[in-house]
Length: 345
Image (tube, rainbow, N blue to C red):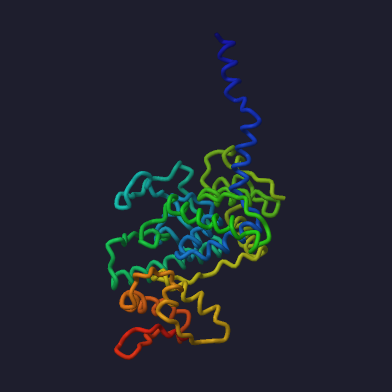
């Protein structure tokens, strides 16, 4: 019987080489080299909700888990550059109204994470964006809006979860699969998940470029044991202060220009913004109703009156923040029939 038990134990830990290779391939696919990371952020920055872009920056530069990323403004000490992690959002199989905070994954997960400059700036942008959006929703109430206190929110005001983030990552990946070779000169073969950023954070810190001590990484990311941290090691040829210095240098060395993205309350504003940026030296253009609808991808049933009542004011409020001279006016025929729209900036 003893021999059988010993054999059973040996069989359990004897993982087939092929399975090890498959597991390694899956792990490799989630890790982005520097040029891949730059292309990824470039495309992610084109998303309508800039909070996903800022969230990705914070995940990459702090190594926190996606559930921990639902932290509140009160959890951040900007003067000291510290993020306090002592809770995680619980949302699996729950409606938005049922989301709640629970304790972190382990005792070691309760920690203080020193913030690199780019991460701190991303958090401040998100807080400012939330304040502006809440003010907008007070004037334009919607039953779809869910007010919450988390720093990173969806366009409906609820905390960003792994599920909502995966949907955005999927759209980014689809664009890269289609256009990466043409736009960036290489084929996209990776698969980014919300956990990829934690994996990359640990791997970059362990690389020869930074070479942060394993015990310091364990403290930073909330790992309870050495084996877990070393399991993230990726061959990519002191203290929290040393870590932050290394991360700041990493961002600067590789020319990651993490900056504030333009944010819009109306989904059509970005289309107008992109259009006027292609108009060369012109600062005024007149579009017929059909041309305007084509520009915004509006259906044929969307009437000119609906455009006027539902869109024009929202678009103007969005774009005037970035183009103070922007205006959009109705062009009419005799008899008050709407002919088109005049856009100037």
